[in-house]
Amino acid sequence: MSRKLFFLASGFYFGFVLSRVGASNYQVIFRMFTAEDLHLAWVILSAIIVANLGMRYLKMKGNLGRGGKPIEIKEKKLGRLSIIGAAIFGIGWGMAGACPGTVLAQIGEGKILALFTFSGMLFGTYLYGYLLARWPKIN
Amino acid sequence: MYQALFVDTWPWWVGGILIGLLVPGFYYFQNTALGVSTGYGNLVKIISRSKLPWLQGEKFADAWGWRVFFIGGMVLGAFVAGRLKGGTFLTREMSLFTEVLNWPFLGSALYFFSGGLFLGLGARLAGGCTSGHSIHGLANLHKSSIIVTVVFLIFGAIAAAFLRTFLLGGGAP
Image (tube, rainbow over all chains, first blue to last red; front, side, top):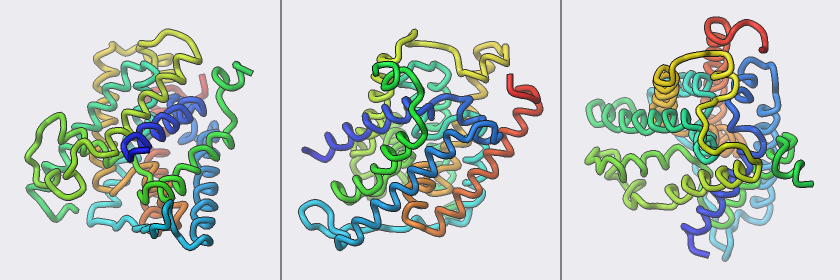
């Protein structure tokens, strides 16, 4: 299977699961943040645990991918403004009731307002590149 | 059976297991970290044909790289999930938000655009989003991802508390 087909298929899977588990529902996210309904918090936590067990299993097998190629795991490094960025992201997450993944599921479900969240994200991403070109130190 | 699979919201652990498997799956099959938000850089490059130096780097050398296909797949997957569940396709509703607030459409649109703006800018400054940092990074016990995720959650909770107090009313409707 070609690489791009793999990601198209796994994206389909991810979007389908996010939608079915309620992650694309504004109030499910909102109520996770107000601690009224922890359904989504359990989804995220159990996903982390399953992912961690899977990574441990791969490590046990020598960290080799398919075809015996070694797996490289890189930690994301923090930039100067990463903490501020994380705070900005958190506010956006709470406001829009969506994150960069679940907004795609909202669009697929036909939620018109999600198109505005999505456009805002594209603009925010562009703004980052624009600011970075002027102040390279923000990275 | 149909009801449980395609209509009712799945139990949290079903979603957790299926999402969690993506992280080792991505490494095993493609030697790649799970992540969504970087792909928005690809989309910006494709749409704006921007000459921003950031988008000329190695990461975005192939604007139509796998991330675009992953993003497209996600929209399609949720589309199918939504159609199997039933109901009208295009809707202006956004559950609690549109149920409680009687805002004109343009007001809501502007609100969600602003939320998206924070998400887009914040994700790039933080170096990732919920999938890349909070699921992939935490599963690999990366210190930077733990710090970033704690900040995500604190400020998400602050934003939600603010909304609950000033916009959406004190109790659950």
